[in-house]
Length: 235
Image (tube, rainbow, N blue to C red):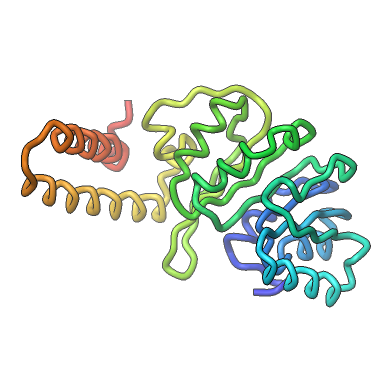
């Protein structure tokens, strides 16, 4: 992967960036995504934010190597603190982190989001918590995709301003992903069910306390939610 040829998941993230947007890529690593966006004429201006010094220095080197110092500003900062009001950022990308960490970044500096009209988020795990955050904070899912790369499965959520309602099932699985039910979607949730069933086996061997009974009930509930979808029994 480099600034001209992104990974499959980052290429998918890039495909949702509106032409002419001002982008802040949080956790930018080598700044490949901002460089790609500028090289391909999708954006003219971007911020690459990194909280760790090593990746920050890598991003600086990459931007200089690509000759994009006038287009991309690299900042060493924690999360959304990399974004300044004068930047005019309207689109934020956060990729390659767990869902809970992405949510914590979004909640860290809510004032930064006031001018933002699109969030493109790629959680490695626990996309559910992002959907829950979106509902609470008046963001709606514009699009969502699931893909597989190097034997890992990723979800990408594209959010825009607006209210939405999701069922428990849709919050867990993704409303659009449930409808499309791609092979990757089926693979992901088939594996999750197998994992939950292993947990159930361990629970059956444990002492029967109130907490254990609740845990068993929760796991069974999640298995039933997913099996409904996989077996085409969505209500």
